[in-house]
Length: 111
Length: 115
Image (cartoon, rainbow over all chains, first blue to last red; front, side, top):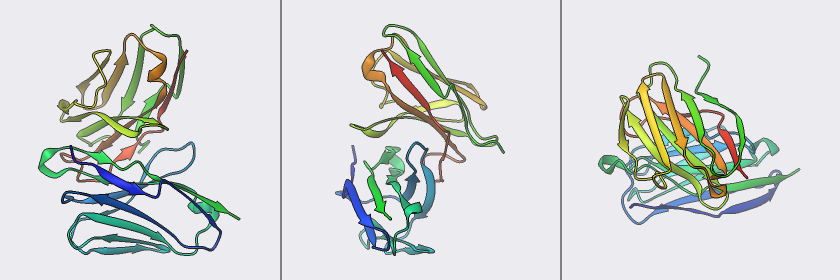
């Protein structure tokens, strides 16, 4: 089945530094959703990207969908301690109905 | 709305016992998902219902696992008999529409420990 690979697996930054996580697929993605899970919590929806080359922003967070719809990225500018958590990308699998979460990137922020 | 409700929040049981996890989706949502999360395997989709009908159960590990959705407001995930390797956090999520095109709303999860 289709796999979405997420890198890096872990990222530790100093508060104020930037952070980026990438989601890659060998096949074309239908759409991409991003979720955040705080430690001990449950995944919470952040955003959905549908169109090739799409870019969306939420305050310090920037989400991109690749031109070929085979990759996506989440960039956080000037991280804060509240950004700590695991960020997951999710592919709905289109007509295959193969719903796939990436393994996630765990972000820790040193104050 | 109360969000997705799961019970129990924590379950500790002994190997061989039957475990039943419960989920109440958000009212009006017609798709429901059961996930299992472990450090080793991440977030795995176990089964997905649409309009109370199982659409994809290919993620169900083995015959010890079964899931039902008797109506639009209730679903169960049963493990019988349970084994220590079933220890994980089990999430239920719901959404509206088919497939996974719309955002999923996750419940707080059930942390299962099988001794």
